[in-house]
Length: 484
Image (cartoon, rainbow, N blue to C red; front, side, top):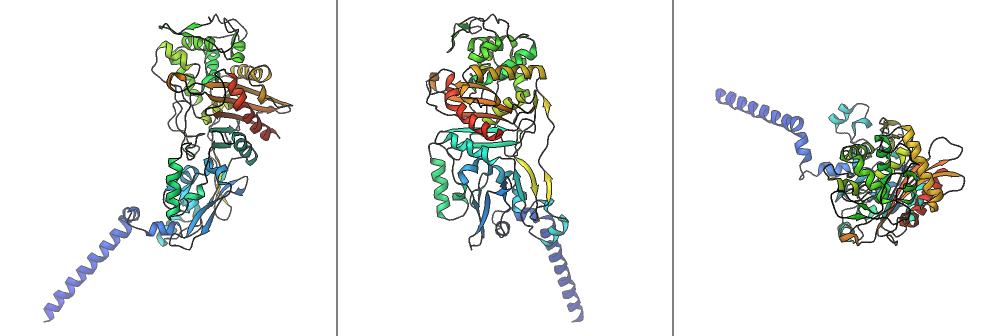
């Protein structure tokens, strides 16, 4: 009998050891796998058991939390939701997160280890830290000016501080209220289906995630390539450009919407936006140098983050001479986001140096203590200072005497470039109107802001002045808010 009891006790002990080993395996080695299992609701419940951290604009929260009283207790709320939706994105208990709500989710939800003094202790005790705050670089006056300027039009605005790369305004219209997607009831699903089915695509962030043919605004890049390569050494010298211009290797003749483009100097061709001059320059510069210059400005970069992901802007790397010529005037397959074209303008305004753009100024914990500064990445020299000054002068000429007059601000130095991008079958669609610009107070050596505006299906003819008519006044309002 005693022997049987001993055997039973030994067997029970082995079972206990096996149970402890298995518990340790599950809790230590398998914890991440079980935690990520979609059937495990504990993580989701824990995620919403406390208020989410705030996204701030100029120190003021534009997001908040509401106690729903349900198992997923706190739902996200938004102040001026449509105005700031292209910045914040949404945080939904049903559909996840987007834009800054996604890129900075660890901080906002409280799961980022930087929020803890001793991360290992919080992990051991399963402590859920209060969410931190994300302070954006957005200027509320400029954001409002861009939003009101676009009004009911489909389009986007991106504004950057050239010296630092801080994104000062980021607007996409038509917009939506991300608060409609915050909860997990039937109304959220209905709102999701309605917003995704809407023809104007209000949930599309046109400033970051949509690319457009940049049209004549791309001539800034082509002018930079011409000057840097030595193809043009004097912006006032004749360029030996015919009008019309036969595209290389084809029977196609490229014309101009403006007059006086035959043999026009680069400065005059820039002001009048002569397609023939810039197409010929692109073909003469060649594919390699044109691709190199586009890349230096930021084209073909799949890794651009602000920290929200940005769709890569495109400049083809395999083209014949006629396609290079068309790409040099912002046509063929060339495509750019408004943020990318704001980067082009900012680089010129900043003496040829490009500061990588960012939306985050700093990150703080729940007590307001800074745990991380914004990503201050080093600037890079894209074009020489002399080239940048020459393009600045040409952009100033466009606003003073050309198609960008509606962007002029009294007492402020403003440079700009209009553009009209044709699209649709046989280019029959109403053009997109572009305007890129920068502004500098006359008592300052540094530019205050660089802006890119695109208006879809602008009510304009095919002449290059449509960018000046539809988009330039919006840019002017944003720049005026910057230098006020």
